Image (cartoon, rainbow over all chains, first blue to last red; front, side, top):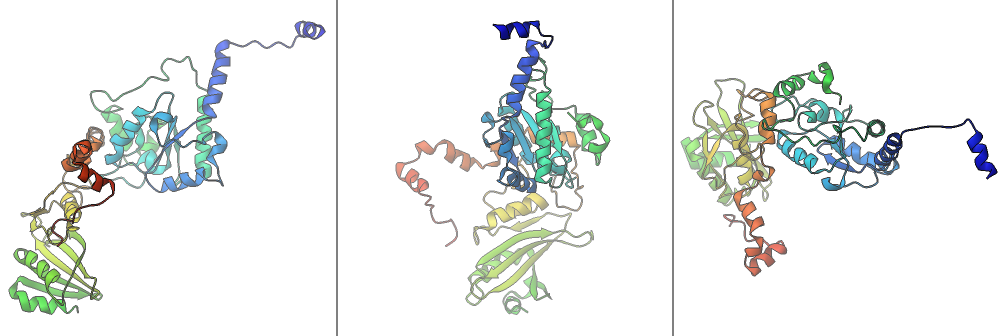
Length: 201
Length: 205
């Protein structure tokens, strides 16, 4: 009992809110066990594989389990350019993932269309699904992707669980688009990604 | 010079146009009406036996006066000879050539690709659908010279149309019908399909 009295008599008190404690506990666990859904379409996928393999070892960041199954995954990693023909596919995969979910756009093509400013290529996957982290590079080195994943960890740890807007499912509306058409046209312009600063999530 | 070129000239006469040798490769231009007979002759005649259709493709030149060419790359696996057959079409006219799917079954997808990219119609093709772009793609034929690099529609319209496509729509009706009615197939056929056994490829002889 002497011990307890010492504590009671001490000045070293810390008060906190229960919500902060819950936020901390849940976000910490979410961030440290992200299950990726790899969506590899091009050379970025090779770098992704290198990232997942033993030298760089994605498992160190709690991504041991590569889902390849949208219903068992938390983060969609689009590694490579997205042709228009794959746009409905990635949209369906994204819709199938349960909340909470995040998206990493890996590489120049996934983020902006890259060198493929042509009739066949989506000019940035954020015209199709919302993106949390953009990883630049052509392709990014594994360190780049790992840095992007750490950025996502940081973002997740800063999330507020009690924010009602955060986990709302935004399905495609009547227009069949995720964003207003003018905005899609604008960010699809050449260099639209660097001129349009509203791109970051 | 590939010996098949003079043999073609001797057999088909006026139907054979220019014969060019470029970097060791022989290119024979053929009249549109005769191309099927020429290709069949090249495949079946003893001493020719071009039994492998390497590729079917097309070329449109920047010079608007020049013809659009449909190209068949042939190879004889026996005599190790290559031969290139070309047909010239007016780029703004009717783009139509006969299909050779009954001569080489492998021509099926190659011709679909030329149709998809250039809009060349292959008469007699059993299933002439787009193959690279989706079937409802409405912007035209991407590899034609009058096609703008970024496509004809605005980016938002392109995204909207792409998102409205049903991904399963890329399969032919036959492929979907087989998948859906698999259980209704005769037991013997299911067994063959399960073992990966296929019937003789049609029209291959």
